[in-house]
Image (cartoon, rainbow, N blue to C red; front, side, top):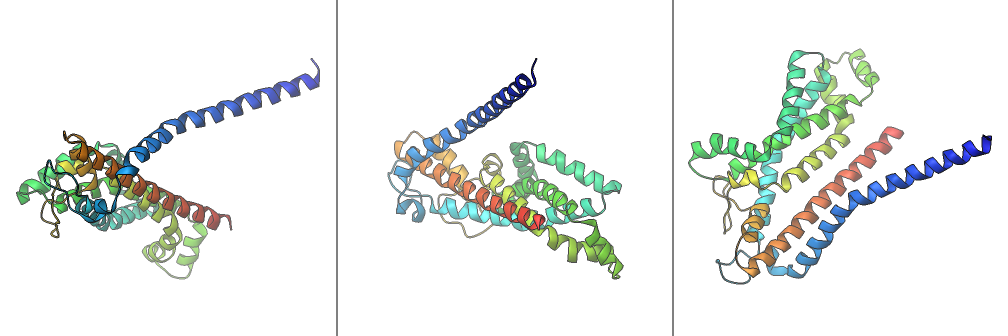
Length: 285
């Protein structure tokens, strides 16, 4: 066989593998594109100003909106983040900086196990530990369930980002007389902050679409709820309730709510991607 034949064979195999990879990408994108197109087609025509500004109408009446559910979702995500972000960041920082200790290994293992627990199990746990003692559904219980889901994501992301910080930065800080804890909080943590923020945004996008834990915790509310110890509406639960109802107008609003939820998650995911690109540029300098 001539050398030219081997060259043509390698080019042919390379082209075939490139085509197979491109086909695999297209196959993977088809479900996502189909979902987006279907939701936009159904939900866009149902969006109006009332949807964002008015409360739900009584069952059977047309009109109304999901203003309370949108505000309730924002409240639940904010409360969950206030709990999960500090805990997750501190846990991830500890695991990365003291990775040789048994406690660090135990924390990492616990985070991995917790990350794999089904969300409905987390909801049942929050129901038993928060709802039953309080004798009521509440935004607090919903935030606890969502925070439990956020913590392992934030912790593992923080660990990976902290491990990417050059060791010379730590050595330089300790050479100047700083303790290991001071170096971790004053030098390592700020250096890993862009990546940590990316992980936080990914965790927010994850919990924003959760429904099962909220069915057992925050439940739902057809009115405005300013107190965190009372049942609170959320966009996901409202969509679920409307989707299983027998009324066409509620089905229409459910599609509109699904569109708003998808756009919210997409926006947060894009923001996380922007942080990732910024981190990559900073690392390349």
